[in-house]
Image (cartoon, rainbow, N blue to C red; front, side, top):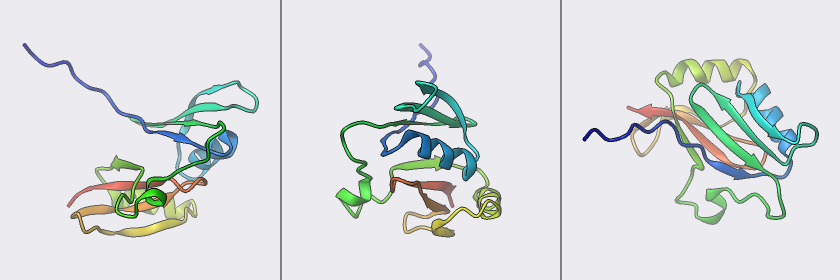
Length: 128
């Protein structure tokens, strides 16, 4: 029996303001808004670029990025990128602030880190 194919996985982030978060992912990182509820002043949204989706939701709990709870867990999402150099150049052209610039990590991954407005840290890269 052939195993069923998996598609993608999407992290879910608790954010302070969904509209602000949508704007960051759209304007800085080139994501589109796949869904938001309600249309005005949303409390939930899904942003997407290619096969990468991120769920964002506001509520009573504050944002809690991984690195704020345990310094050894430095990322909230790993985004596989076949060509991190090209994406880093695109983001530099959009004036995205890099938390860590393009380079080699201690895990032997080639890529870079970006923090979103709530401090969630995304790594964009690939194995070296």
